Image (cartoon, rainbow over all chains, first blue to last red):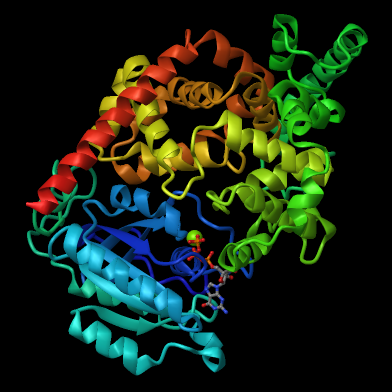
Length: 211
Length: 342
Ligand SMILES: Nc1nc2c(ncn2[C@@H]2O[C@H](COP(=O)(O)OP(=O)(O)OP(=O)(O)O)[C@@H](O)[C@H]2O)c(=O)[nH]1
Ligand SMILES: [Mg+2]
């Protein structure tokens, strides 16, 4: 657990504010979505990570000052044909990480399509981060940092180049998202009652989920 | 458990998880081995008068008790109609399909997925014969089903078929039977069949376990989150291996409705655990943990109860539900495309 995100609050201390957010990972198959999650949640990396079928669900909590931010992470399958299932997964998400592989230009194009789709169809105000993964393979790079940086800036996205393998920028990107998410309305009880329940999913705007 | 006689990998080459419950497994295996011996004897006598394993009500009953491991390959081929398919297309088909060129993109996705298929299984190590065979099977399958090509998930199915049949060509035919005959449109470019079946499943749960259905809605948990993998991987990588194989015995004989039975059995048996979950995170965890519990591990009890506890589940009901859901989807698509035009 050496690479664990931010240290957990020691037991016994009064908990501060707890916020819970749904975060979805999207991007072409094999760009490293599951690997980023595995690094973030368990501090591990597998050379051969099994392909995700449907979606996988994990949670991880990080601490920003006195706020505990709990991510409900929905890691999705990347193959093009699983696209039709995606709306079921990103529905109601307050944050998304759209991942591409810096050594593969096609995956960057696919990422742009995901961004477009999220901006059109996901929760209005959703915080989107773009992750150029496999930074450790810098020598085989085919997507230039400038290009992605500009694209991210123009589209109001957070942007980082990451490596699930070396763990570069992995915690950082989740942290940057946590910082950008609205965290008002404080109480300090954990447990039942979560973010706003939406029957129409995409039609309402992003609201805070803090308890 | 230091005294366990079981190794860190099972007989199919899968690595047992670190938290594997050897004690529970030992308890199960001791009883199950007796059962297997008895069952094998019964199968031997069955084979005397039905050597071709022709389908009939007695065989169906036998299949539900589990096909002996050594008979599984040929058994699955006979009871599923694989043999018929093979006779229809000719036994040269596999060779021919291996020579047929396939789309480069398809080939590349398959290539990427080969080392990502059962990486923990000792028989699927880098550059192993099994990895090469798996690649050929998936390419040959894509060659004869260009409309499908390759869908992620097929790698796990073909991989497990290979571990069991130990025969590349049998795998190819069994994969074809599953995709072309048994499962409706699961792996196509739009995956419509699986989307429909997830909704069908959700309606069956509503009917058979309404509380769980309500609870899922209340916690905003779509069935797709759990059921996609169930259906796409046919419970491989989900249930314990022995149980998966028993499910596949029934699946090859009885068809896709078996998948609903398995899902309903899990939901029904663990109803109270599921209802006790207070948020989506614990519910998702609960779904992950129930499949590792002693009940699904005890495959013969699990399979038996799946036929006695769920009640009738006629194919006509499944077909009606599929039709209904498909019609609703079509209507919804029509209205959204109309709205777009306006
Ligand atoms: N060198 C390097 N390899 C990586 C990195 N991240 C992931 N990989 C490898 O890339 C392959 C695919 O990673 P996954 O995390 O399974 O990719 P995914 O996006 O989840 O893929 P799907 O589940 O198929 O959609 C695995 O073999 C990983 O080991 C990275 O940062 N650097
Ligand atoms: Mg993945």
